[in-house]
Image 1 (cartoon, rainbow, N blue to C red):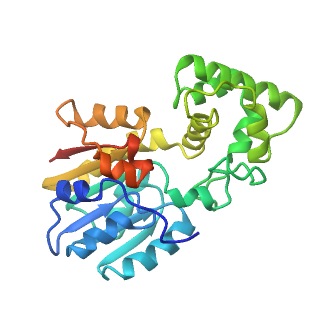
Image 2: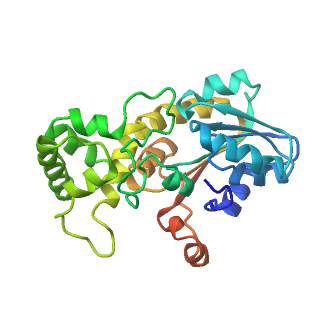
Image 3: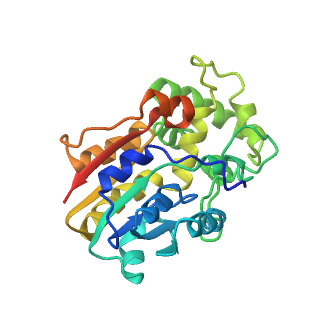
Amino acid sequence: MNKGEHVPVLLLEALNALHVKKTRKYIDATLGAGGHAAAILAKGGSVLGIEADYQMIEIAKENLKQAGDDFVIAQGNFVNIDRLAKENGFTQVDGILYDLGISSLHYKNGRGFSFENESEPLDMRLDTKFQAVTAADLLNTLREDQINEMMRAGMEKGEAKRSSRAIWKYGQRKKYETVGDLLQALGRLPRFGKLHPATKVFAALRIAVNSELTNLMESLPRAWDLLRPGGKLVVISFHSGEDRIVKQFMGSGAKPVVPCEDEIYRNPRARSAKMRVLSK
């Protein structure tokens, strides 16, 4: 993966929300390629970066070295943010950032996050060492109603029903192994506007494989306990399921900040981003 391809979303807005100061401690709970963390380092902050994906950690290391040396990287999932923070001396921190979802670099890592390469294995695990269940495993073992419930994390009721029916029927004839198998299963589904019919399916499947919504619900209160009085909790979400959890935790007073038109033009991935901030 090319380390220079990922562009962090709402970068300036996140830095302003965190109120980054020299020598103060910050946790980047979703390190990724290190874009947000590098900007915090450049302003003099001390960073603990948490990342589940070993490939992304190697990319982040190189990117962070260019911004400073006051950082620690912990391999793991942010659901364990409390343990990872204590192990690395990052309790009573000044700010915690979550940039949810996956990096644009993940779409090129050969694990089936994108539907561009039909020959890739249908994997979708962020942590290939400690996560046992792949996307193919789920589709090969779940009942139709369970697939439908999984799809509801990323789409409307009618879309979820059509998608889960098509997925289940295909699975009765052939075992899922590659991205191409899932695309064949979805081949006759209608297109909604410019959106490819597989887009929401792939997102919902990735969320399920990595337990993203459950982990977020468990992680936010743990992160809150790590903040010192006056500390900032900043969360950037990319779909309604994530944002609903964040809004429920922060309350209706945490109004969303969205990207400007210029950022969306430069980085289309930012289109659905919402940032919410809560001060302790």
